[in-house]
Length: 553
Image (tube, rainbow, N blue to C red):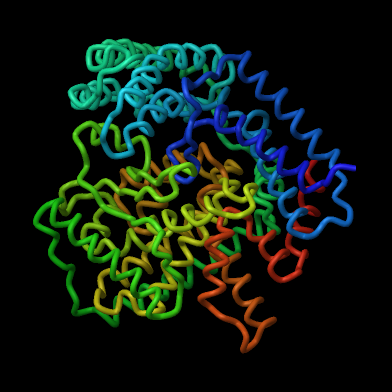
């Protein structure tokens, strides 16, 4: 009989080869994949049917594996594949954004272009050709959108898409005009700059036409956006493998909200005489300052015994926002996080000129880049380490709770460890951001269950954090269209703390915090209920997730 572990690895390899060609694009940075050569997005009815058929085949293969007697690490890998397959079913048949949410097609049309712009120059002939090809696919993608959305779209999502599309064409035109002189000529490059601009005009016309089409039909679209209790439970327990039901999650979020409010009040009182620091003179100064801060943070890890820093580990760097990217930065985090095939390539965060009216996170990073290093920089390191995992099944993204939970946990770890002792404003910001992440749990659940409208969710975020209205609106729209992602920060962090505390209790004086973090970062793509099982021999959380999943109709 064939070895189950070998069969599982073969299944995972074939699944992920298929997945990188078929996964939808989103504005999230963690979920980005490296597309195969010649790829273009395809959400035609035939392509959706082919996705569903492929899912059935992979799912049947996984269910047929005999894992009895296999070691825990093999069974963990099998559960990872189960999570990945559940996510495909979630996308196609439960959330079904491809037939309900016009914002989905803004992502499929434009984020695929945006992602190709994120790596720094040069724009080789191959890369230039990819940009022209994906740009040229936009009219086709938006034609597929009309076919798929007719009779199924939700009006609030349509209005959100229309708000995004109002100036999307002009923004795309500005970005591509700035890019055209940088493209490299070569075979298959689509006529370089000329081909790019021709494809751009066709794309702009298609975007404007899609916006008009939505405007003509929005009044007839359904009003419901919520995925509902049953759909949310599918995500929580089959995709994210969480051992908590919705009401337990709500209580956890509210308790953390109280703790964050109290912590922020204490820090504001402690630092009541400290003002905000001056902003850097310009983006170049911000980039230079971040480079020094990133080196200092890495030294801080080593000096405090918190996290190993191998010499081969890539850097996390700021870079000035290029003219070809700035008009499209609304499409996603302007963060070049890299891909599995290039684990050594530095990660980049593109930054604007420092000014007082920057959005919430950007203003904090302009004042102190370490607030950005403490979260996005952690993603860059964790992914680079996980991409080198000796077990290939664990090198990919499965769910946000592990990745975002680790990064959010790290923010408070840095606060407690003294990184921000010299920066009272940054310490207060970390606590304020804790309020935001706790509040996201409540907002995420309420949107998913239909208890909040998009407008009211944005109001809650803007008023309760507080934060700028534009960022609050972006968050509300994203979380409404991606249930479960907003709560992943806070709930993932609480799972990390549970894992840590349980390890301390079990290992006593032998517990090593640095070693714990090294393992956590390496295993950072693995849902934490599975990490608990493998590290501590405790299957209680994954068993509870299964019990809750079995209760789904």
